[in-house]
Amino acid sequence: MKHTLWTRREFAVTATLAPFGVSATLSALPAGSAIPIGIEMYSVRSALAKDPTGTVREVAKTGYQGLEFYGPYYEWTVEQAKEMKRLLDELKIRCFSTHNDSRNFSAEKIGHAIEVNKLLGSQYVVMASSHEGSTPDAWKAVAEILNKGSEKLEAAGLGAGYHNHQIEFRGEFGSRPMDILAKNTKPSVMLQLDVGTCLEAGADPVAWIISNPGRIRSMHCKEWSPEKDKGYSVLFGEGVAPWKQLFDAAEHGGGIEYYLIEQEGSRFSEIETAQRCLASFQATHGA
Image 1 (cartoon, rainbow, N blue to C red):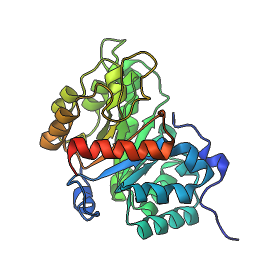
Image 2 (image 1 turned 90 degrees about the vertical axis):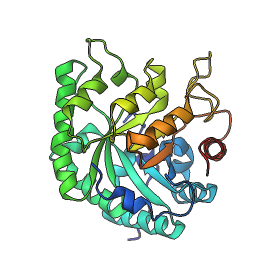
Image 3 (image 1 turned 60 degrees about the vertical axis):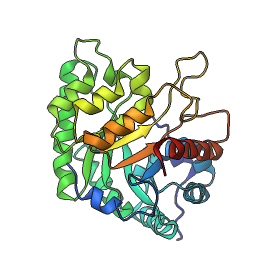
Image 4 (image 1 turned 90 degrees about the horizontal axis):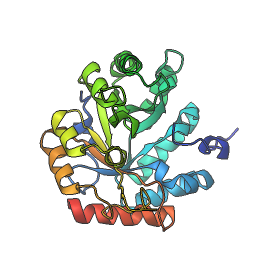
């Protein structure tokens, strides 16, 4: 029986859901910025659900050097993952990392995450949401899950990471969850910075990078505006993110290995939004 890459159901899932040779591997990417720029595929989720192969081709055609798959990737079979890797190789782009529910780090599920990520050529398995609670002890439990998961991932040549949303930069119990996670996870656990949600939470993303040297190995370049009815709908460069300072901090101590454009939606189609954000990123950062 011929396998297809994904079913519509699989892509209907919502996105709420120490270096390991990564820099050396990423340096072999196509010419472009010294730090490669990719896209979090949640940015093109509707197009992806309708035509996954065509959407990945469009992303590559736009000029992105790599991508990060989100939640539904975990449901892929071995053959689906191999088929995707063949497509990525044909297009000469990379899967930098994947986003995962915290349950994917469990003893029952992490094996499949490792298998699929290895087949895709991914470098990091990133926890993008957790369900352990909101107290300091709950966040320490998240840190322990990351530490235990990282042991299995590192043995397989992969890295573990954590992706923030707003809640991690708010300290309702006196301590910010991100500070708890940074303090209680091994230095090898990447702290993937989502700029937009950090800003909306009222935190300073530049200060965060500086205070966690070497751990901000990837960054979601998501824009945000405090203006009414704008929020995350603005394109890269149209909000309040201090991109020049962010790039400087990330590349001079932060440990950045790759950037990712992420967009939750704009006044343009998903593909055009991806194109416009990439052009703006290149104009700001430099190609």
